[in-house]
Length: 595
Image (cartoon, rainbow, N blue to C red; front, side, top):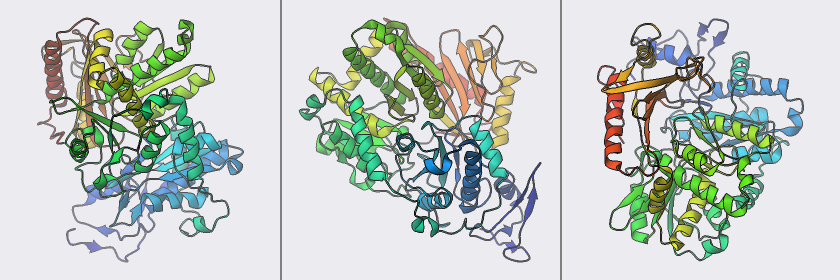
């Protein structure tokens, strides 16, 4: 840090006034200084609060209302308690679930475990396997302290409702309002010994885990075959919490435990062996896993992210290196597998009428192609598994059965035993699918081609640019919405004609008779979808957890169309035009994906 000019006293209280609230800054475990030229940074930290994105509250571990720290966690927990006490009459008897991962920041002393303890000082319960535990114990709600695959400096505060799904509107907005009304820490909030001494605390982690493993039997279809499979698997837990649970899930399915990557098996908040703790980045961050698999003659690698809710999969092809499946490709395989086994157990075609599959709207339309031919129902949701989880809950109440759901960012749910993406159960399902295909002399990649031959090739491209300046993001999307005048969207991109535009931020959809979007509005994030005359669908959206503008493009070919190279070239050209013309990376100082 540059030389600082301290305030008159080291702990002098600063007061900032918002529109309808006064916030007092209490001790953040470090002194605030008045840096000349650091007004922008202080304003960023102090003049706004974290808001619920696609995965709860998520921010860097640092000082300020816009960051994760002791004070903001206490304020968030007080606000959540205030909201629950008002709307859940039996809150005290139902209790709450609090879990945490392995994140930590040495310089500030902020860790996921410490943060969870601060939450427990009000909630008095502590255990993990979050969404499953909430449903198993009928808890009023749950809190998970994690930033999943974000950079090591970040942490988060993910909230689950009593149905086991992440909270959505109006709960998120009401909790935020209660947080602002509960900004002053209550007496005893800083007492770190309260959790250890409380008679209300219990840690039924082993009970939850045992029950979860037993319930995995509902999505295990060929256990006897699994026990005889010659296939070997490697698993990386990416320095997170997944190792023990994936080991047990494989054993529950009848497999030997997968071979762990020793350098990444144990929790490490510094994620010391990877450039970023996100297995979605592909081969570059899976290097240790792939090299270990080659030495052990294992054909398949599975990798869970740090909180074990996402899953990456790679398969060794004969003499052709490794095939790292995209989220969309793996979803095609898993969707086929879950439907195949459903039909085996339900030969009456009439039963298919109550079957559903779900995907987020930026994900591949391959499940839609399945549904069109096979006769089950397919639905899209907004990005984020909170939308999928709550939709599963609604459908289940009416007697429907959701057998598979996914989001393209390697988030999958086979069955509905939890209402969130689950890398642990999906890892075991992938192993069983691979073992079954091996008995048919098929690799997963060969089966993927078979699926595309039947349902049509679905070729997609997904990537992102990084933008650390919110006003720039606003300017980019404002330009799109007013490119031909006020409220006039672009009619083309490069040489390609745009036929329809959907903007869920504003609620506009040119394909609807009333021009209104069918999906719910998402005013806190930017998302615009373009449908081109050649059939390509492209979406630009801001991430709810990171400073990224993501872009998604997909070419959905009709069954029987096999000129893949021309499809891929057309998709490449549209994607390039989308990025260069609509995002203008050089003009806006955007950083391209570097991994």
